[in-house]
Amino acid sequence: MIKSGHLLIGEIVGFHGLRGEVKLRTGGVDSKAVELLSESDSDESNCLICLKTGKEIPAAIKSVRDHKGNLLLSFAEYPDRTAVEKLLGGQVFIEHTANIELAKDEWWESDLVGMQVFTEEGLLVGVIGSVIPGPSTTLEVIPDPKFVDMSRSEGKTILIPFVESLVPTVDIKAKKVQVVDLPGLLEPQ
Image (cartoon, rainbow, N blue to C red; front, side, top):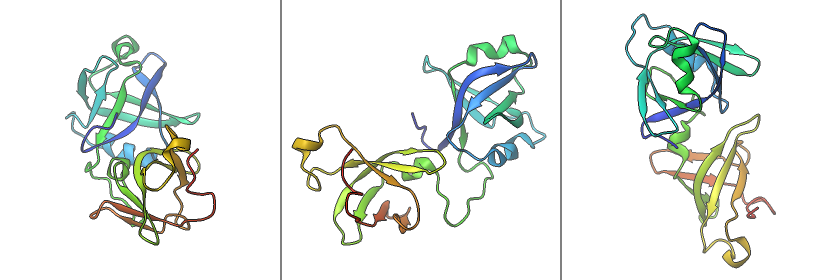
């Protein structure tokens, strides 16, 4: 689930200690970006926790630290482990305008999803359905029926490594991404 105007920073997958820290499995989000939010002296809400039930809870991130490949977060409103246990499975979102500066070649996941993907020759490949985080971020593209034979590709997607040599142009304003058409790269899998 992607909340409009928000960036998913991770899912609460467990707890750490008795002081109300939650273990957050992230999708490759830089902990430095989240740490900026915890440096505020204010106890104002700076994130949104979406529970599995659909309930949305505003919260204030109090502290952030790396721990064995996950982030440990604590919230001002939840002082101990008993208080945070109801948050298990919840997804944590921050506003993507939350004082986080992006480099020239960085984009918000929520801005990429839904963008049209074209070849350098101008052929519509499809639409970005999701961004798969990891050591090598991948764009999952839902193919356009005119680009592929849907009788053989029903339910399949196109996976494109999100690197400059394969995705040379990202135009957020036009909502378009340009990809290189290498043999086999744009085949549904």
